[in-house]
Length: 160
Picture 1 (tube, rainbow, N blue to C red):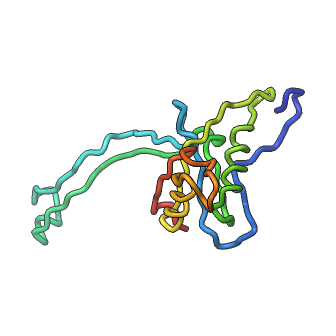
Picture 2 (picture 1 turned 135 degrees about the horizontal axis):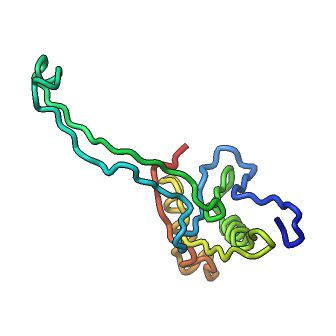
Picture 3 (picture 1 turned 180 degrees about the vertical axis):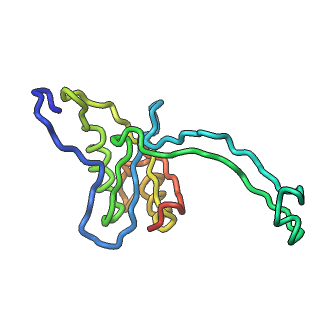
């Protein structure tokens, strides 16, 4: 809702026109509420099956089985704290646009949400491009205005 009560549409996805480019994410992890949450339901416990009277595997095959029993759930907490960029080159302009878009997101009543992006999450294929973009002092002979604005995090779990 905007300040007048009218519904407005906002998105946390930027889709470019270069199909096949790896996706990356800009996150705000500065708040106590995180973009992703993990709810632990049962703490992980190691379970063993050593007793032949209770385990067919031990009795029949002489194999001892180990495992971990745990329960939990993961999900999105506050969708505005995570922004996905897909089918787009990782460039200075794209990052500046996403950061600006995240900082200008508003909640109910048109109030700014005070989002402060601080992490760039990339797949391994974008690691060095991200570091060059966010850690270099000078790029192509000019000062790098993005230096130090986001921390680069690399995860092989986001490879598509």
